[in-house]
Amino acid sequence: MTGEQEFDQGHLTRFHYRLITVAGLGTLFDSMDVGIVSFVIAALIRAWSLNDFWAGVVGSINLVGMAIGAALAGSLADRLGRRQMFMLTLLVYSVATGLSGISIALWMLLLCRFVVGLGLGGELPVTTTMVTEFLPARVRGRGIVLLESFWAVGWLIAAIVAFIVIPAWGWRVAFFVGAIPALYVLYLRRGIPESPRYLMRTGRSVEARQVMSLAAGREIAATSVAVPSNVTRPRLGVLFNRQFGRRTVMLWILWLGMNFAYYGMFLWLPSVLVAHGYSLVNSFGYTMIVTAVQIPGYFSAAWLVDKVGRKLVLVVYLLFTALFATLFGHATGVAAVLIYGSLLGFFNLAACVRSRSAMPSLRM
Image (cartoon, rainbow, N blue to C red; front, side, top):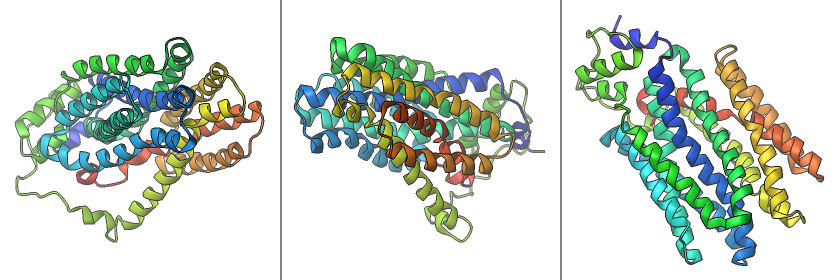
């Protein structure tokens, strides 16, 4: 048995829970930032007299940055290491979020939001890959879904912060609330070592064994830990070969549909409610209720994914996502918006299988 095989047969340890917590706090503040924007837009429409076009640009510019950041993160993480990107992406996000709060004009806010997107786009895949490479294979599904649950908590905190802060102190303070704690998470991340699987792939077998032993809470055998130095990373084109091509296309479609439903609702719900005559405070309160239901949704997936399998959970949750997205789109009253919006947030959980959909060397 190789050291990696021995590591993969382990259980979740105190180290793993600490890793998931520290990584998850970064995800929480990422989500909080994206969520805060949905409430800031509603306030900016009034404060800066934004029309629908510019309100849309404010809401989507960070998504453009996220797409670019995610595309760059993989190659940078392979060159610099997971840990370095783990730190760098959160630093970029934190600084740019703070600068968003002191924006003196629309162009400055858009520039800051784009840079925030670069950090967020790199942070999310690097964090998931980092945690995935630390987790034993037998508990990886549950661990990743637990990590993803921090996203729902972050959006809920964004709703609470918006409900309390924006009406009283304005939208700028809301950005500061997200930026300052994120810097503390950056401090906590200094104690997380480099990914052991990354160390193996770069020929640093002694360090890999030490990190595996630390994570497992026991000594991992030194034999057969290192990957031969002449092993090359597969080309990106492998994702489109006969083995992975169909899976890649289907995952693209899955992510497009899932993000369209999720961001289409949560990013614009406060503004839509305000446009329909509800007060800023009431619209934030209704959104807070809808957001809170995501949390039990994540924990239900975490429990089911290792019980019945990732594929069945994925299919069932996506079917319900499609159903409630359709019903939400036709909702007219507050009760219908709350019920269908809550159920849409509960089931929109396709992310729980993303890190297992490609070979390990291509996950970034």
